[in-house]
Picture 1 (tube, rainbow, N blue to C red):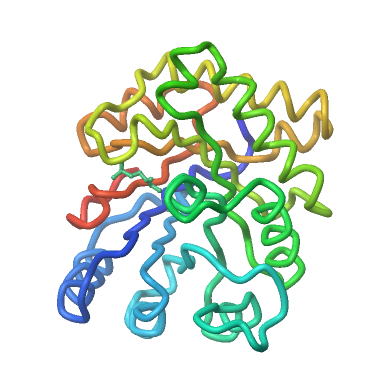
Picture 2: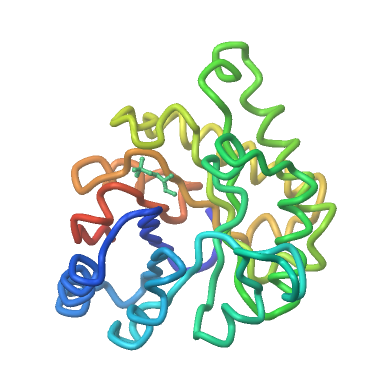
Length: 242
Ligand code: G3P
């Protein structure tokens, strides 16, 4: 397993209002969190300031995306510098919804990761196969290709957490079995050993995302190579998974 602390991220995606987010924050602030777990929440950009100013320091804040480089004349974008300025510690990059709905490609995502790391942000680097790719036996190839794009771009893995999110498990209620997830996590770690270094492979946390909730998280967390979760839907219900 990775050597870092267990990592639990809540990706709120494009959800929430000032009111519902205020409620979520007060639930989180009063929750009993295990001390050896990193807890990170990722609100939509416009609510980051609200979350930063009301969430206790026990938890950290992530963005769900950022611009590829320095800010400037890029209408509608948010730069890594601005995320740092507002108190974000992390940014999620390469989420399947950005890959498959918005059309971001590996190279673009890799560049974003490199730039964000250069600004001192941690990167939650997402990878994962589509159902069809799994059915065609291409799961590992797809994950390796997405990983390679990160590896080719990032100067260091110190502040990177890898999130394996099989696309067929996202928002579908069809969670990967602990064995399915473990199989990919171990393959990702082996890939890192062979293509980056044994040290990076052992230090980098590999977290699982896709229909994680309060009832299935314990079995997943028991797997040797599952070092945390990236939770979507369940994180909006204020469920704290540790
Ligand atoms: O980034 C987390 C996510 O994609 C998983 O979403 O709703 O299946 O937990 P969900």
